[in-house]
Length: 555
Image 1 (cartoon, rainbow, N blue to C red):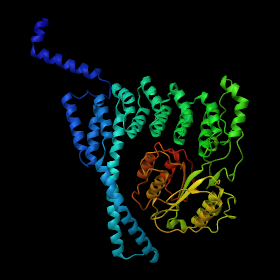
Image 2: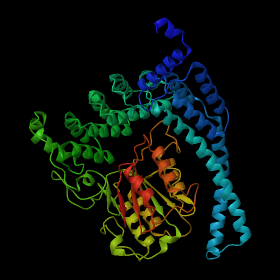
Image 3: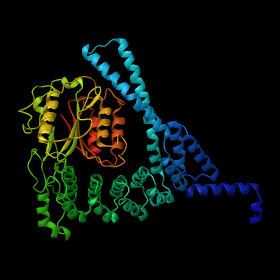
Image 4: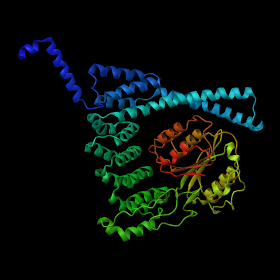
């Protein structure tokens, strides 16, 4: 059969078409799908815009899934535009919840008071009235949660894009978006971008110097560390001099993540200028690079550098093998290790110890569980890890969990240096702040007064973990959202509980940990967690510590 006859044959035409389709399928990378036609894309876009014009969170998320599957430059542009849209539905939902919250708090306080008077028993009518208010509070919070999750869904959709043009556009244009919150999301997305093109690293390096937003600078530095972007070493090292401590922490962490040998000298120089928690962070990074720790002691590191600088810079001195407990010694807690750091035990005026966890922080919050189960007796010898320094007396004045918590808290307050700032949050069914209007300067008189408060704590009620952590982040600055000014001084939180969440806006351990991770994304707050007894919320506590660079201890 001639070529002309073959072309004219209907069966041959069908066979040729089938072969072309087969070749197209074989040429398509596994897992990829054909780009939508212009008509299909226009529909996806219209569906997304229509969904975002409603308060239906589920419809929004479904529309975002369709946009992400398009995996194109157009998809990237639409997703960023959606991220920039003011979310009126979320704002209204938050307003409704926040306006109702005082009424609910009053009802919670009343039912707690009645339960205390009735020794755990309340009238069924009083309980029914409270449960109605609690149900409404839960529903209002659920609506806020659902709408808040849309922002996360947009970020997730951006993260699923693999189109090279989309990734480059996010780097070149997305990181220059007018909305700093959107730029933070773009930086976080680019941290996981597979594109090896230098454009991404160059754009993130430029964003690390974003003068208008310290949050973006911190997010960009985090991304460079996660990408292994050693070609951006100059930008990372320059950020050690940033005016905001959170950005300096991000730079320190990136130096460690990138294993920058050339960062040892600048880190030691910076250590001489820092005080408080930043010394922990720098010591951790130096431990990662050198295998040595001086527990954040500037003089120890200065002497080490004077002795070893020439050999280190010549490449003749290799990293010292780390001891098993060295990672803990480099900052939060644990025994001394490595290159001759100081001995064990807290130093008054320099190091604070709470349940055996050490910190050099001078801006911290203690969040302490005083729920009814804290009245249970426990093994005092197992629980008490601290000595009698700090003005807390010879030891606990009883065998209850609360007695030990009182002692540990009072002792930790007494160890605070005079220039430190601190606060105390207690929680049971409700949440109370010791000093609601401001952080407390740790003068001798202020510490004595706070110790009296700590030593008078009594257990009652349920375990409201979510609201306690939420309140702590409000004190950090900027409510649950990232502070517009990013000037919060609090850098460390101690969180103590003996139970599972049984009250509050959320009782779901995973949800609570997820929310805290989101609140703390670029805040850089270190959370040390203490679980008392076998019923402690291990899932939450372990994640709080691990995801913030803190220490978790189980007592």
